[in-house]
Amino acid sequence: MNQTEVLSIFKQTGALLEGHFQLTSGLHSSQYFQCAKVLQYPSHAELLCGTIAAHFGKGRFDAVIAPALGGIVVGQEVGRQLGLRTMFTERKDGIMQLRRGFDIAKSERVLVCEDVVTTGGSVHEVIKIVKEKGGLVAGVGYIVDRSGGTVKFETEAGGSQFATLYMEVVAYKQDVCPMCKQGIPVTKPGSRSNAAA
Image (cartoon, rainbow, N blue to C red; front, side, top):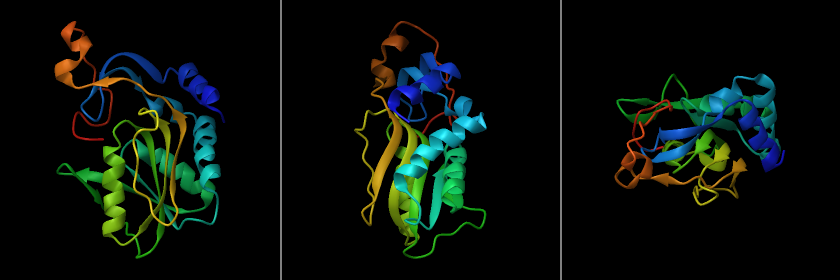
């Protein structure tokens, strides 16, 4: 899929929202990518996640891991297409953790998946967990990169990072947000109300 085709799916499903939003990172933006509105359609999930799976290819990974909540569907579908065991991390008491009996063996090659990346905070937390368990972060794949490619992740064993859509969407700290200064009410559409992501 090319960038235009991916953006078209977001527009036709009403998943590219316009307004005044507080992102999971705490930053404010006039645009919000609600991947859940795209991923509710299995055909779109299969297509977008298939682009990620095709980029990384079969046989190079032992497992897939994704942060809850947004990354779970992406990780599961990429894992299904690659035939890999799939896990997710989740927050408990505000700390990203690997729970539910999931574990990563030493030197396992792991592909980290996510839906949308703005600052990359959640992905960085997942990468830290993989490394603490002795695994190798052999790639990072996600649907939307809101940073336009400026966010970089530390991979190992020749790993790369890949998004199906790269867009540089302007985001502001609250104290300099022009929409806040205009008194436009803010919406928090994400799965968390604050903290880095």
